Structures are given as structure tokens and as C-alpha cells.
Length: 382
Image 1 (cartoon, one colour):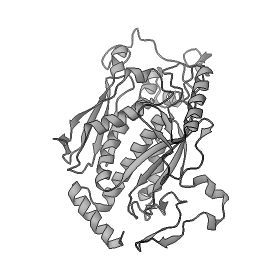
Image 2 (cartoon, rainbow, N blue to C red):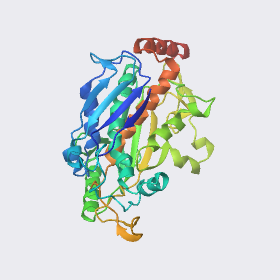
Image 3 (cartoon, rainbow, N blue to C red):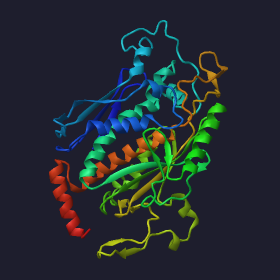
Image 4 (cartoon, helix red, strand yellow):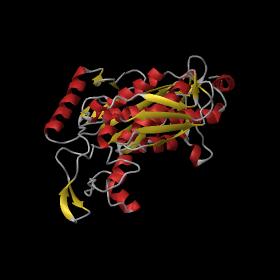
């Protein structure tokens, strides 16, 4: 299962085409829309979220609520496009449209115009915008629907916003900071309050905040992924997927970077028999992946998101039309989008896992995949 997206931030809409989709996946439009809503909400979001109310429209690949086995095409319309008609007209003229000539620090603006030769930064920023991730979330909802039939669930949460942190968490036992539909909510109200306070303070100062998100997948059988070739190793595939999300600057699995300061005996997970006589791990320091494959333990990864580089207190840049110092333009006023990034990362993880499961148990239809998975479980007695 793979996807591609098309569309610009202020164009008519965003399209996701999900290919290699097995036949027979029951889809719930409400579940897709719910994930889209989760991505839009969260403490610290800006005015664009008051305009857009994302809903999915299926253009192909689904009939009577089930996938057909053909590519699934999804459309998310941009309500804000009505305000950008002349600036984003596919067939109109650039005459009378003021170009953006001040590339914004921290964005794809400067590298994009250098690569393409564009003289209007809007050619770059419209596509590089994180608005595109709405299409990824819609695609990820299809992957999550398939994984649910294979006994796998994927969830996400926020661990840190600015310097407000939940501390060390056991994702198998603690709900942690869940990204809810409307807020940054936490099992510990004091932590949630500190996060809101940090966001409020950043807003007052014209600043923005980043943070750390976590994604956990549970119910995975051992052996999903691969060890024989670089392209099949699950941790490398997941890292590439999560790092493709705008503003992500680092990723770790399990205890991650902390493992570099430990001795070997304190870094690895000993193999044991559980109460039912099945092979397993005594701990989960590796985050559920060893040698490029799942271990059967919960898969846990964390990623760090930098502060949004578009600030209400503009950063300095150079106007490419005059070569003079200028203030970077402001396209939106989010203070913190860490909760939204967690939802996008959840979708990316689901898409990679769905594809890796297809490598293991087939790609034709859900019923055949479930039978093959049952046979695999029986063979490894898991």
C-alpha cells in the first residue's frame, strides 16, 4: 500500500491516491473525517483551522463502503481557495498578482526557488505547506482500517511541547498525552496545563513552539519487515516516512539515543518465554524492532518537531527581487502544531505497516490476508 498526493495549500483541494489497496477493506467515512478533524485541532493552532472543516470525498476505488482492489482516490476540498482565486488560477495570468519575493527562513522557500528557478516563492510554498498532510491523514485512515482487520492498532500522543514534558512513559500502560479532537489533554492535568501555558506565553511573545511526539503500534506479529535488504528494513522505512513530515528533525525507536550511553547488557532485550510458552522479550528497549523486523512487542517511536518557522515576530530574510534585507512573510499564525504532527505521524506509520504486512501475507484481498496471517501465527506459535 503506497500513496501519492497532489494539490496546493490554497488551491481547490488536495488529492491522495492510494495504490496497491487490497479488496474487501470495510471503510467508515466518519472514521476518516474524524482523523482529519484530529489533525486540524489542538491547542495553539491558527486561523486557517477556523476556515477549513476537512471532509473526505471518495472519487474511486470504493463501492458500498468496501475497497475494490483498485487505487483509492480521495479529495479534500480547500474552503479557503475561494479567497485565492486569482493568485492560484491554473489558467490565468500572473499580471496583477503580487509575487512573494522574500523567502522565509526555516521553510523550503529558498532551496525551492534555487532548485526550480522560480522568481515567485509562492510556486514553492503552496506545495511545501504542511496543509498537504491532510491528504496523508486520509490515506493513513485506509491503512488503519486494514491493520485493524489484522489485529493491529496505531495511536499517537504528545510527550513534550517546548520545555513542558510528561517525562518517561510506558506506552503499554499509560495513556500519556493524547491528541484529542479539541485539545492537548493529558493523564496528568498539571502537565496539560503547563503545555497550554507554554503555548500561551509563546503566542504573547510572537514565538512558536515545537515538541516531541510518539507513535505506538500494538498487536504486531514478529517478523514484519526484513533483514536481507536495506529497502525492506522496517525501521528505515518508518524513519523515512516520519521524517518526510514537514518540520521533523529527528527520530528514535524505543530508548533511542539513550542507548548510546549504556553498556550492552543495559541496552538489549533478553529473550524469554511468556506464560503461554511463546518466545518474547523481557523488556522493550529496542522499541519493538530488532534487525529491521518487528519483535512482537509494541512498536514505539518518537520524533522531534522544530518550532514552526513562520512567526508573528518575523525573521529577517533577503528580498530576491531587490537583494535588500526584508521581513519574512507570514502565511499563517499557528503557534504550535505538535498535536497535528502526531496525527500525521500516526498515518505515516500505519501506511508503512500496512505495506509491510502485505509483504508478509499477501496483497489480493483482506480475507486471504487474514487466513495467511492465521497460518503464520500458527507456524511460529504466536
